[in-house]
Image (cartoon, helix red, strand yellow):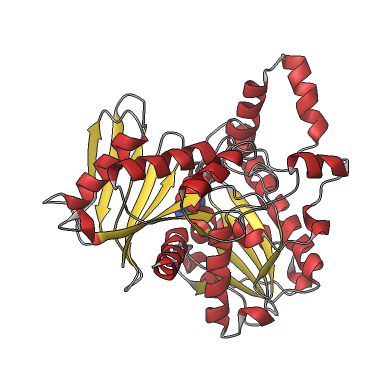
Amino acid sequence: MKILVINCGSSSVKYQLIDTDTETALAKGMVSRIGMSASVLTHKPHDRPEVKVSGEILDHIVAIEYVVAMLLSENHGVIADRSEIEAIGHRVVHGGEKFTESVLITPELMLELRNLIDLAPLHNPHNIRGINACQKTLPGLPMVAVFDTAFHHQMPPKAYIYGLPYVMYKRYGIRRYGFHGTSHQYVAEQASQMLGKPLEELKLITCHLGNGASVAAVDGGVSVDTSMGFTPLEGLLMGTRTGDLDPAIILHIMAREELTLHEANTLLNKHSGLAGISGVSSDMREIIESAHSNHSNARLAIDAYCYRLRKYIAAYAAAMGGLDALVYTAGIGENSPDVRECSCENLEFMGIRLDKAKNNQAVGQKADISADDATVRTLVIPTNEELVIARDTKRIVEAAK
Ligand code: ADP
């Protein structure tokens, strides 16, 4: 089955056309700068070079039209007719407490998704826009919503409740939800294969370190804790997000700098984290480069990043009462031996010990980077969130037939 996987942001659409028979991407790409000047579509067919097209892409509907045209194009396309696309899988960031697994998109579901906008005002509206755009451009195709939060739905109350009056949870759904669920789930399953042991018998810590970043404690295949919370702002330091913060700080800054809610949101989500501390960039590669040329705040940003990650790793081993394997994934986790080494420092007491040469060699590919005498395995596993979305979409569409 050929499934179009769509991930919509405020001004971007990421896509992959996945053949679920071979579990490979026939093409992948991204439309960026939607609604701005000089929008760009980057498209990579699996067997030909990447192409870039600029144009005026005013909204998500036009973006999806460009994507479909590219998939059909004579020179860069991978299908001959749009009827070859049999279903669409959408990444939806927040499923609240209601959506504990992927679901078929129906008019009723769209109403429920709109009700969830309150919980994820920065993300869900764009996901909904993407679903509407696909309904217009590819009418009649079955579509499935796959939630970032779903994998964490079995977190116990002691892990998800905040120290606020309980009425805030009952009234507004304020609790920890967790995100990046498809990635944590995928790499946990891959780890179980690599270790040759059923997921049910494993205690894993999965570190998804991309622009956004989160850690999950996966005990017997169930996410029992994760570092992102009510929103993706909590937890690790990220490219531009603060991660954990004393909540009083924001009240203090808002008062001192006379910030509006919108400005405060922007400060926490867009100007903080690695970018905020280093003053260099949100991109770990550039920060590492600057640190190598003795930029002290770049060094501080990396040290703070790795230190917090290390604390989460130890905390989650404690939460599970043990650990079989630690997994690194996403852009930084898959590609940065420096961050892996620095975040594992001082964890020898827990049985985590890296083989320096194996760690340095593991870039963007599956690898066991543990030293021979380590009692906890440390693995690098490239994530594939789109494949999880495609698999779920196929399963649900076939069940609905
Ligand atoms: P997204 O969350 O947007 O999907 P990615 O998973 O692609 O992001 O991760 C992006 C991050 O990965 C950036 O900080 C980038 O610098 C980092 N990254 C990619 N390659 C490397 C590398 N070789 N070394 C260090 N960091 C890297």
